[in-house]
Image 1 (cartoon, helix red, strand yellow):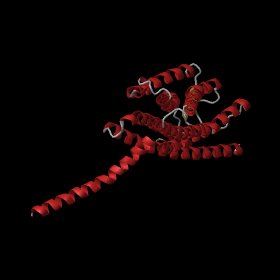
Image 2 (cartoon, helix red, strand yellow; image 1 turned 60 degrees about the vertical axis):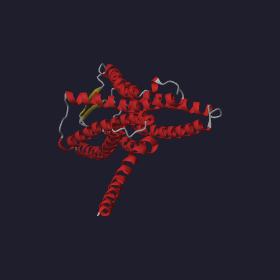
Image 3 (cartoon, helix red, strand yellow; image 1 turned 90 degrees about the horizontal axis):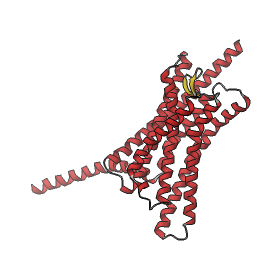
Image 4 (cartoon, one colour; image 1 turned 90 degrees about the vertical axis):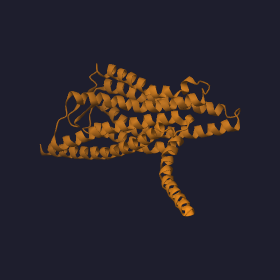
Length: 324
């Protein structure tokens, strides 16, 4: 009995540490993504973005908004887990179940924002003559359509399977890993299908650029080299998302094979997600030139404004002195 209590207390301590680390990472991700999202919206609202870059910047805004929402939802889960560990407080409610469904939908939408980014690059590079798919309005409306479709698919799959349940040891709601049909269905819709679409699209773009390399003008070649470099950087980010999800998938498949559920499985699964979102919020700045230029331009504006004010003040003083 004492051994059981010690194991239980040790498990709670480990769980509290995992939740604390995840909370720090998610707080960082939400802070950075929130700031960058506001910077992007500022530039879009005041027309500080070049016309040819607007779609790319809007797609970046969608990505950062998705990161922000996912990070805030994970923060809510982390806080509930920590309060539960400290005070054994239960959060089992209908709202908890709703938040569990919403969390898996928003995770799927995070990957769909990368699908949209890849699709736009496919149209711009491979099917550049198709102007309808290069419309700014299309990419503004597209996430709304996607979230409706993803929500309908996930709800139709998970609700009959009772996919989202309350985790009494983790104090939040999410698709339970012991429900194998439910968790595999959610993984296919929210994770595997979007990731496969991203890989297929970028493979298609890469093949097209290599095939067209010998018959294009120098200007187009330079543009394609730049696009290929950006695509490689984005693929590194997407690959990072896949690699960081491997521990979670490994533990789930171990449970399927052995039938033994690790007490902290849910918190271990969410830790790599927190790491990826925190890293993603920074890495995108260095992988998308349009986004990097926007952030740098804001810094330049802040540095130039005081200088301009000083110059104007000097001119005014000289004018006054001259008139005297």
